[in-house]
Image 1 (cartoon, rainbow, N blue to C red):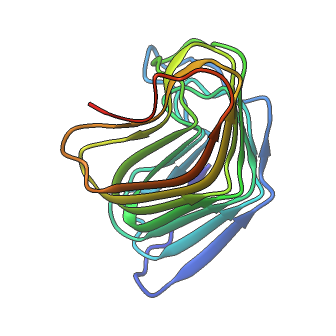
Image 2 (image 1 turned 45 degrees about the vertical axis):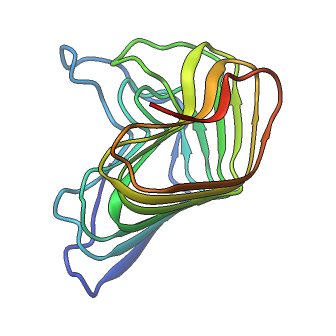
Length: 189
């Protein structure tokens, strides 16, 4: 599904989209994404209460570095690269559930959340990861700032709760409840 608001003063809402079966890898290694926020997105879009199953690429992929994307609620399961991948002027991810209990073929590196750029606020996540992966939330070098609060991580599969790649802006993490062993709650590469 392709989503985007092509006017900087425009806004839109996508609600209750259900893709629980995910998708299959049929593109010769290029993956498949559940919901793609267009490169041309410049306005504000709210994606709420969606159910996205295992895709060989991202569940929700925000590929524009402009505009605002707000993901509220929803359930994300076993996607590759990221369940929700954010990049933009001002993005948020709130009150969503992630379940990673099955490895699937694709690009590899299954993680619930990836922050690619911009200023991002994350809160109220419930993450269950029983498969062996490097982290639950990855912050990439072009990210200007990330605030992460009131999140619960369980399942014992992640090496780190949050990993921050060299070059990323400040990451503020508060009230992160991790059940089981992790190397670090916030690990800086």
